[in-house]
Image 1 (cartoon, rainbow, N blue to C red):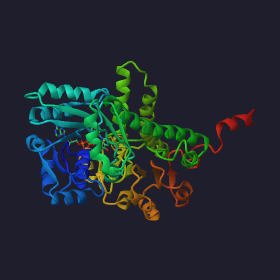
Image 2 (cartoon, rainbow, N blue to C red; image 1 turned 90 degrees about the horizontal axis):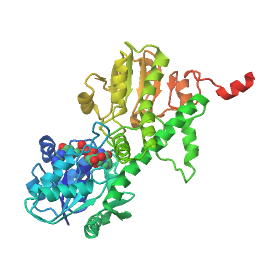
Image 3 (tube, rainbow, N blue to C red; image 1 turned 135 degrees about the horizontal axis):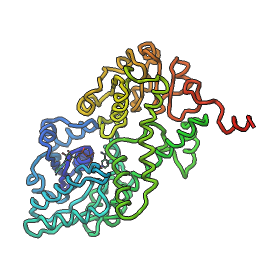
Image 4 (cartoon, rainbow, N blue to C red; image 1 turned 60 degrees about the vertical axis):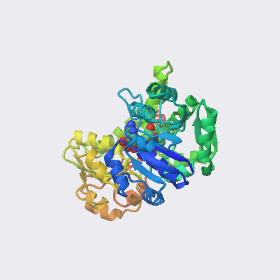
Length: 451
Ligand code: NAD
């Protein structure tokens, strides 16, 4: 059993703290958000993450998991201190490090004994060194400490499983002994451990997220070409995926990536590159394509409906992906704004994100079910591939709609079945269709026939 403190009790901090407690450690989670800590102390869990509530309650009951707003209380027994505060995008795309700075300063001012300080937040290359400088500068008296980078790779929606069964644990430090102590903490996870220096560890996180985002933008670009040439991107991706060098993951065309990580991390990496004289053209293209995917939804609706003014458009799914209530940089937020700008009346439905939606999109009306959403709609736009949308009673939906138009932003449905069910079906890169207005004959061949 080790004494672990986690600073920042959000998606990453709460899952990290809870899972370390479940592995038998004594964990204190610290947050400056009093309401969040109060919710946790009274048995609630402030975020939606499958399975999390049960594991939190189990470890609180076993007296292994504690919550506080006090750094003194949090650090009193600590040997390991994880920093898991937010690092949102700043004005030019650079990572905003104000929360990391505040956490490091407060740790320095509060610590009374040696600590291993582990950075779990996604931070620009060089931040570990900067954190070490801040701590040295703000200590009341010199107390030994080490800084280790341990970037987190969990995905919201499967966070506990991802934490407990990681593909690898990356640990970076200039202090080998400290890194090895942190490696010991992770041994029960039975994952490969990559021991490296601080800066390389920080870069592994950005490079991994940027690569996954690149795969999504790549397949979205292929989808745009498929759409014009009459190929089906879903089958193209499946055909590509059998190649072991390529694999199947992150090749789903759609409205693009969102959430609190990919967009901000790609932008932050581009910013870091630019700042230091590199030319991150690929990263810029990844973001350009992603922005365009969201606009394409609106273009498809304009093509199908003409003016959107006064049209009732229903958004199926508001969270940035299934199994989470997180709406940070969710495609739904931007798409709703574009549709409203065109004069549409926008409605939404999500199985879990309504409390968040009420806060972040107060002008969007919320329906009680997909069927309520369909009533009187001129089009439905599927933005989050929640399981419950995969087996809807399509006849009931079509009968309730004013116009039977579906834009399938996640390619959940099959075009022939949807057309058979009486819908005007508009997927992303799903080949030609008489409904989508795309010519059945690729233009290159049509031109040759004319010659
Ligand atoms: P979050 O916004 O959900 O949580 C951050 C928490 O830190 C908040 O509860 C906030 O109140 C708290 N906080 C801010 N300043 C503090 C301070 N000085 N002291 C104590 N608490 C403080 O963020 P998140 O989604 O958990 O992300 C945290 C970090 O992990 C980010 O760098 C993110 O990029 C990275 N990350 C996130 C995910 C993910 O899926 N969310 C996955 C991997 C990595």
